[in-house]
Length: 148
Image (cartoon, rainbow, N blue to C red; front, side, top):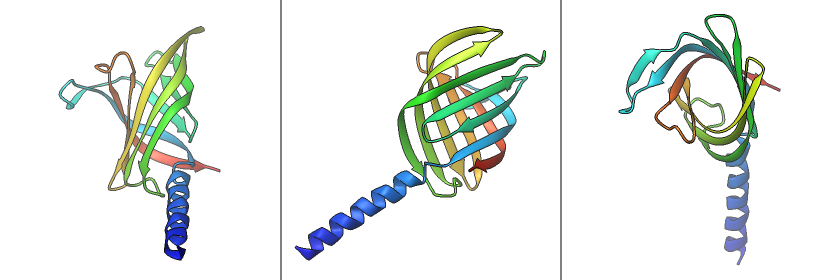
């Protein structure tokens, strides 16, 4: 009986630890942005820059276009699948997001999908509208700063 209670306590503690690792908030800047081809290969570079802020419950993507105008996509997560280590250097997080896109004073509602991937300390974010999975964009992250 003691073994069962101990195992139960350990599994609850490990679940709490795993979910806590995706509770951080980061602001990231991009080094490169490109279109992802249907076969998963890198397509042409996108001519804009981005700043992305993500947390356990929301994501804000702010794009600066070549003409200086901005496009903002922000929303709350409707689901999260976290498989990231505590220092965000290995693993992935997938978010489904109920988002609003604001461009030039016009707002449009959309469902977005984001996948944050980290491998060997390098991070990238793949994003696309849920209904248009063939329009994937990859944001290669230059710098990430944890927001307390």
